[in-house]
Image (cartoon, rainbow, N blue to C red; front, side, top):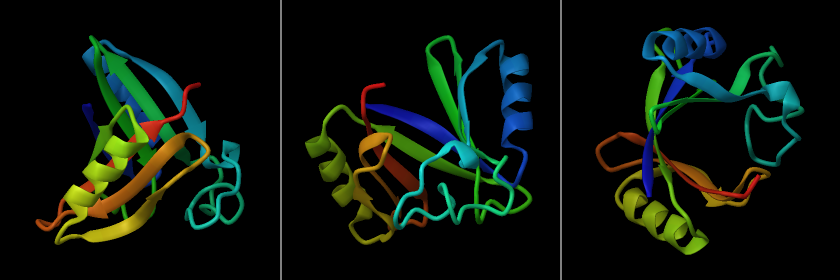
Length: 140
């Protein structure tokens, strides 16, 4: 299991990740705009019906010395942005277990399910109001 900080920005994800890569001596290893994503039922901001600016970043990943930082532009980021913890697990069963455990007493904001990039992915706020994502990636 990996715990990965996920930063939400309001239109500045590309700029911020380039800054962090330079400052930390890392490299942005992947970046995808909302316009690059296929339409997805129930996934606000993905593909058709997404943000008004299709050039906003849907996913960016920075790697430095074995550490990972992820980011995106998204709704609700506000001026200061948001920080979410992404739990990256190996199996569907572990994703469902971790998601259910973290959601207990909290609020599910995106039910866990299959996406074009993940065998399982979901979002929630835990009982303490902290945002989490659980991700079981598909091989690429």
